[in-house]
Amino acid sequence: MKKVLKFPFDFYWGTATASHQIEGGQNNDWSVWEKKVAKKLAKNSKKSFKKNPNWQKFQSEAENPDNYISGQACDSWNKFEEDFNIIQFLGLKAYRFSIEWSRIEPEEGKFDEQAIARYKKMITSLRARKIEPFVTLWHWTLPIWLAEKGGTTAIDFPEKFANYAEKLAESFGSEVKFWVTLNEPEIQSSHAYMKGLWPPQKKSILLTIAAIKNLISAHKMAFAVIKRQNKDAQIGVAKHQVAFEMARPTIWNKILKKIADKIWNFYFLDEISEHQDFIGLNHYNRNVINGWYGKNPKKVQTDFGWEFYPESIYQCLVELRKYNKPVYITENGLADAHDDLREEFIRRSLVAIHNAISVGIDVRGYFYWSLLDNFEWDKGYWLKFGLVAVDRETTERKVRDSAYVYKDIVEDGFVENDEK
Ligand code: BGC
Image 1 (cartoon, protein in one colour):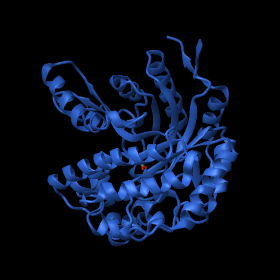
Image 2 (tube, rainbow, N blue to C red):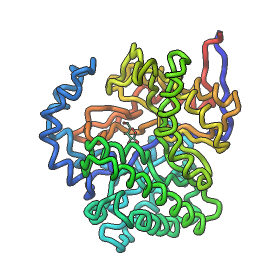
Image 3 (cartoon, helix red, strand yellow):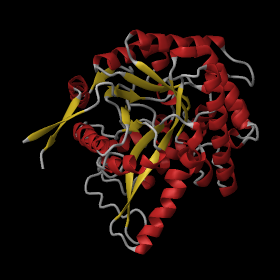
Image 4 (tube, rainbow, N blue to C red):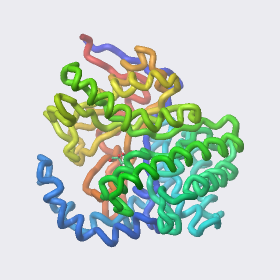
């Protein structure tokens, strides 16, 4: 017997992308860095992914230095109308995308009105298709002038970010209601500064803390300036949450969970809790605690080598209850080049989300990551997260089978579950 799980009628069914990953033709801290490290990343790929059972699938791509250079990406800077047609075809009601700061402010204090006009055109074009824009202001990349003075650790980073946010809020006016100031601040800070993997590759705990503190201030200042321009704006952060799950509720496991939750999941949200209208939840992983972290059974793994366990989103949603704010799932998805698992992933994730709604969590939208196969940061192009496959040579788009399944769910407004 199947049970029909109906979603609220005004639920924002959506999908998400980020500027650097899809637009192409960038001139920012990442595009400079990629050229320097591409050969090394290609050479080290086998070692980095030696535990990944899917290695064979992507070895030739991963060992090619070109894979690590964003280059023309999906050419969405030029092909955005085509992307929006696909979003419309899929029946989606919302699209989360990011603005590329380096295009808007290529030189400190000098705003490029043409670039602003292009993003305005995108917003109008989405609205014409009845697709609600969710605008992210910062999805990790930085203008070169800002990176040169320390990026997120620069003393005036919060002020620079607020100026940029104000300029956009003034330009977009009431055309944009939903604003995501920052994408996963702790992922960027930990990769750039704690692990030293991403630009500027400076390993330092002090810089990591400085970056996080600055991002907290940057968010608060941006929140205030956007509200000043548009009092109806709804503003939040896209927060990376991990479901820390205890295998057994021993005292030691409880201590480990408390520490991890506080540092990774709740610190940032607690700091900004008075300065957000909603919580953006980005969710990809659980972390099973059994004497120590990372004891996941990993029965099935995605192309990334991540455990396939869509149900973990339920725990993350329930644990956000204490903030008493609406939640939008601003990212959730998987790398699956052959589209073997995506359909099941989407269904099971939606069942878990529906379960969270049934116990009173105010979930108002779901953005599958990602619309397109795109540039997956230091992994390059071999990981395919897209509802839509993108040919690397021609950038031709092809809607995957799983996207049709998502389309059906969206059009029905419900997902089916096996009755227990
Ligand atoms: C990021 C995306 C990225 C995705 C998959 C998220 O943490 O926001 O930019 O593509 O993870 O790795």
